[in-house]
Amino acid sequence: MLPEEKEACQSLLRQLLQEEEQLHAENRRRIRAGIRCLIWIPMIFLGLLFLTESEKAIFLVLWVVSLFIISSYLIYIEYIDFQSQEKMRRISDQNQVQNEALIGADIEAFEDTVNELLHQIDVKKAEKRQKMQQLLKGSNQL
Image (cartoon, rainbow, N blue to C red; front, side):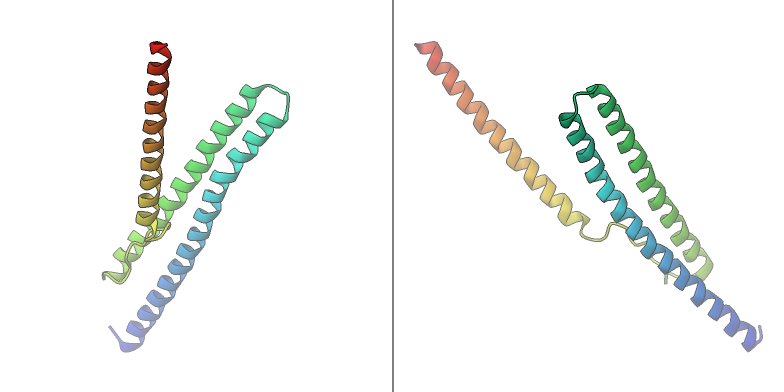
């Protein structure tokens, strides 16, 4: 291969890698927007459910359908991003391109926080259950 052709190929590869990085950054923004929608849209439906006197089942159905649509969107974005990173790895024939999670490395910290909150909820439930059992035993003794 001629030096000019080799340099042109390397330039094309750098440009391709740069475009893939831009696409990855855009996908991260899309994921953040999707997660915000996953939080806010159910809140809106919940607010409408309590503020209106209309049929409650309609809001429930809309809420569930919106969750499925947003979840599908998030899965699609993650899949597209993963596929583009795999293609870049195959094209470059190197390990320059590493699959990077869209959500980020903080997902383990988030998972730990959620697990801790669930543990605290379980502890509080157990305490309330014990109090109720003590109250029931006290009322049975009377």
